[in-house]
Length: 296
View 1 (cartoon, rainbow, N blue to C red):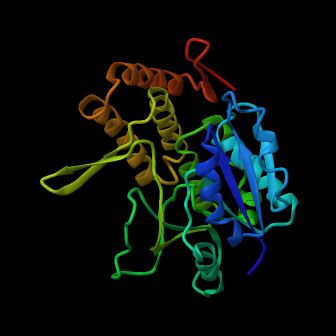
View 2: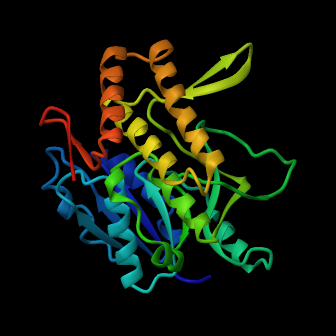
View 3: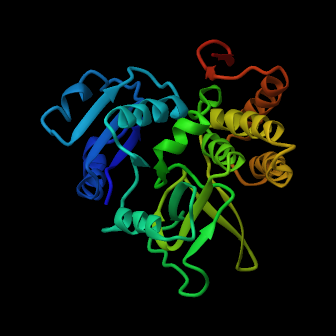
């Protein structure tokens, strides 16, 4: 198996819980690059937490610069260290045994010539098992960042993650750019990776799945709406179906806030700000200490 690194993005995390998660995949890769976006009071202590582990390279950013920026830092360091593939995780990722080896085995197939990303099947609930029916490998329109095995040559060819977006829909934009350049995005449908998004809850209607509500902090609504519209506009000609789905996600986000979520007025205020900044092309990080103005 070729050289594979893990890139882990952290933000104001629990040390003990993260170290347990880290143990689930550290032995499956050659090296782990940790990019720390934290901005809490423990920031000075973190510099010393990983310095005795030769298998870990730790980069403290000293502030939250966004997931796109952190991913670009980690991937570029991996490329500088001659890695061809890197798998990305967040601090909550718990990885089953042999997951990375099974993902990498896809590269030996002659059916896929230009792979940009290989992803496991992401489940929002613990103890989820794959359906034994259906194809094992499916070509996808896009996948989330956590658990994605990325082709670093493709990264060099199509360009870095879009740092103007800061967070939310960053992975979707990158996947669309990969496809625009002819790369495939594959999911191993029977390989499950449990992943928790916010305080996710499933909403059912007469026992059938209707939607997920994630109950993120109010400011995340801003990024979800602004960035969905930004990506939809960017790819409206090349990927009209995906652009329509992104626009629909904005409508669904507003509907979920009104019907299902708490902090409704605050989230609606951030939603309006998201619409406004999209139309004014105000991108980058939302400065919550500066009256909600975007900075980039």
